[in-house]
Image 1 (cartoon, rainbow, N blue to C red):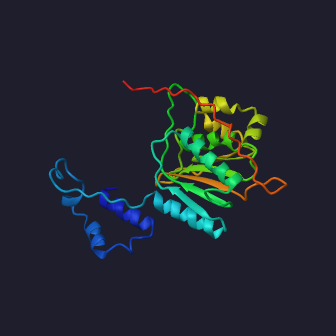
Image 2 (image 1 turned 180 degrees about the vertical axis):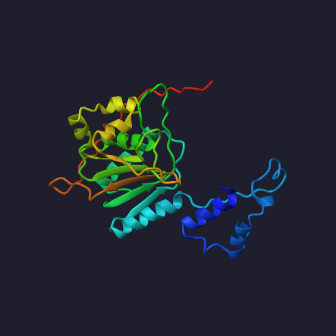
Image 3 (image 1 turned 45 degrees about the vertical axis):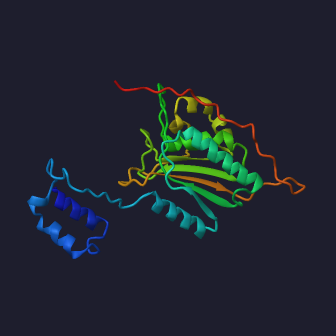
Length: 254
């Protein structure tokens, strides 16, 4: 299939062929070989323009609309949180969720926090299987352990998270206990970057298959109404709960 036929096929497959300007349809149907593939050097010295069809903002806006429809106030924290270690992001956002749960700040529960972008996992010499979304989700589990009000999910919009079969993962306050019962060592899993097998043992991975598109990742943290003691005061935050971090070693390709 040549470039013209491929473009026509894509437009028809997504049912927008009749919506594009007639001049574009005419150009594609004419299939003039003179304008088909860009030849080497053809754009050299000429102005070039790059257009983005869709970005993470569209995904986050859609998620926010869905949350609103369910009666849950959404808060989009950042559209593109990129190039940050998944462990670091997990710790920050988990503590934020805990702050909301116990003290009702900076947002009042119930609410949902939304975040886009692509995080990093420095694999080093680890041999596990996973991806930045599964690692992010698994890394929040020790920090929200015991909570009956927090759920964390992270998923790659293209349907594939790292070299695993999953697109992402889901955890809540019961995840740590369930992993213990399943014989999964969370610390070892995080140190070996083996988040896929840890979450797979619980059936808590997202399996969507390749989606043929990519607007980066979606991280979702849901916080229900905050807990209170019998006297009405907020429960204390678990300030001493911390991740046991794996050593960060970089492997450079020769």
